[in-house]
Image (spheres, each protein chain N blue to C red):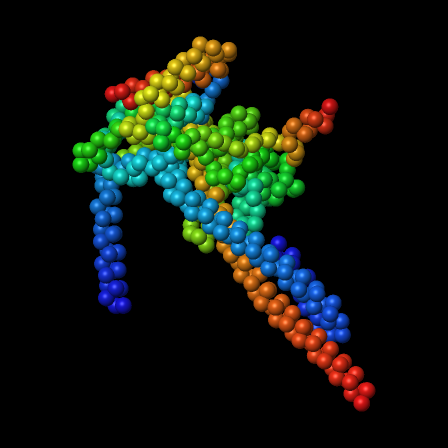
Amino acid sequence: MSAWRQAGLNYINYSNIAAKMLRRALKPELRADALKRDESHVRITPWLNGRPAHLKAAGAK
Amino acid sequence: MAFRGVLRNVARRLQVRTYAADAPKGDEMALTFAAGNKVFYDKQVVKQVDVPSLSGAFGILPKHVPTLAVLRPGVVTVIENDGKTNKIFVSSGTVTVNDDSSVQVLAEEAHPLENLDRGAAQESLSKAQSELNSAANDKAKAEAAIAVEVAEEILKAASG
Amino acid sequence: MLGRAAPGVCQVVAVANQQQNRNMATLKAISIRLKSVKNIQKITQSMKMVSAAKYTRAERDLKAARPYGEGAVQFYERAEVAAPEDDPKQLYIAMTSDRGLCGAVHTGVSKVIRTRLQEPGAENIKVICVGDKSRGILQRLYGKHIISVCNEIGRLPPTFNDACKIAGAILTSDYEFGSGKIVYNKFRSVVSYQQSDLPLFSQKAVENAPKLATYDSLDADVIQSYMEFSLASMLFYALKEGACSEQSSRMTAMDNASKNAGEMIDKLTLTFNRTRQAVITRELIEIISGAAALD
């Protein structure tokens, strides 16, 4: 088993780091455009029993 | 009007013919090589593909036994049918060789070697190395180790 | 927006016809209505322009993502991976976005999942809603099936990192499914898209695939990494298809809305002029009959 998987990473994490490094090593004129692909805006909320999980946790307090 | 119609018909037939010539035959290998940033080959017939995988680099020729592999950062070499070689640096991704001799190389990020910048690679390598030295926990250490590995490969490819 | 405005307009027209004696008031009402419809048309027209520009980009992106998506599913088809019979747990991923006013793209995807949830065996199905729209549609009746909601989708073109984040959320959620589907809108042309799906499998299902034995040098580690990445690839592809369908559909929807507004403006202008004419006639009659009375 590879070291990164033992440390709790998966191949997607591995791939993200590798892609990020590659984008930073591009020629300057290509880099600006490539760095846009670093961005991600998605927000993920786990749900439980029909409502967001964190709301339920807050309600329990 | 009628004349134009005839022309169009001929054009359509010609197009069909070229498509048919490109389609893979029994002992040919169709390569699809796409990355998040660009499509390099789309079902194009090629002679040979060399890929770096996590379980070792290997070459794929037509009629290769079906297999799956995950890429490690490195250079994918494609030898096209006319003998032209194309070297492309890939960050990571998957390789699939199917039983119909079709090959899919899907990378997250891929760039031709000439787009790499040696200076920038050197810089990101030293940054990654210092991050590796200052990593506080296992996860950060593993992340930095991957970054160092990638940077070293990029540097090697950019210098070569 | 326009649908809501329409009944009001009809009422105004009806009122104008019935109560000729109160023309002054309706004249004002019609001109207000006319102005608001004109404003709405301006808005829908500019929204159409914006989505046309976004659509051009989305279509270009999609062209690059298509070989990617096709490549990702090739293996599952070729190796004849099938859903395990002993594991009924399924995961459905609804690929929509946060933004509305784009025809039926979001309802289409949600409907596919809703139909599935009405069938027997629904208790084994969990849903991940990508985009607030599918969440909004499914949450009231099927909220208990939702295990994750992803939002902030649709404002900007999707990136591979977006897909990775969603894939990461699926991998780290403790829900262990045997198989599943990514339900998305597949773009066909500017005027058409179709609900389509991509298969999801557990690692066990892949390892039990009948033709996997023909594949060389595989170990569990490779399969695991391979599947992680191919999940991200498929999500990336589905996001791109969805984005393209959405923009094209919004373009059509806004175009139709502008056309409808145009028709409405024509009708209102006609009524407005007619009413104005009636007012003038009435005033003339009043003046003339007043003068006649003095003689």
